[in-house]
Length: 110
Length: 115
Image (cartoon, rainbow over all chains, first blue to last red; front, top):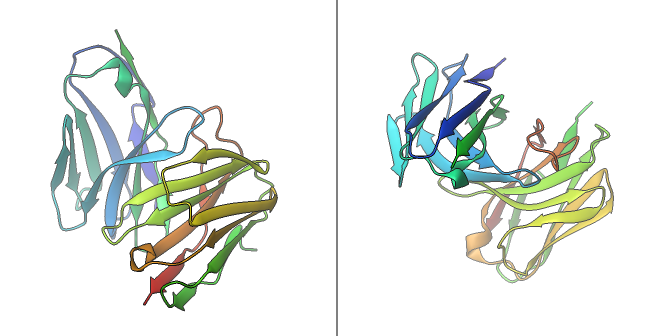
């Protein structure tokens, strides 16, 4: 069964710092990997999606990488801002089911 | 013992028709969601209900209307279907979402094709 783990569980950084969130999964037979953010009381906002054949995707200050063979993905956030504070989740899918990670709670301190 | 079930699994229909997708969860959860997965496989939230009350209503056309007769059911009705509505629609549930992230349990998806 696919298991998705995120490290760290919580992270607090001062504004302006660059940071990396980690995601690991046990079964490399994935269709794609997606990063989301969730703000309290709200649903998921999709940030980036990486197909299994891709190595990375970029959107603004966000960069996500994927190493399928080792079962790892990272989300790099450049020049963090207080508005980046949220829970970040990675999820993999085999095309039929979604497997969500445990989440990283990010706090960016002004 | 399917936790989150959706019907139908496949739906092929003509433009302009009205259709409904049903979702039921037997987990005793308070919150249910509808997501749309587009052709690029992005998963985007559409609606969220907590105990029959609408709490999230993202920017979707008015042709989409969720209905929650009780907290175990969240149905999605779509009026005047358009070609761009073709997608996979996922229902999900969680114990509660208002305090933050809770594990969401997804249904198998409904593959909608509008011709």
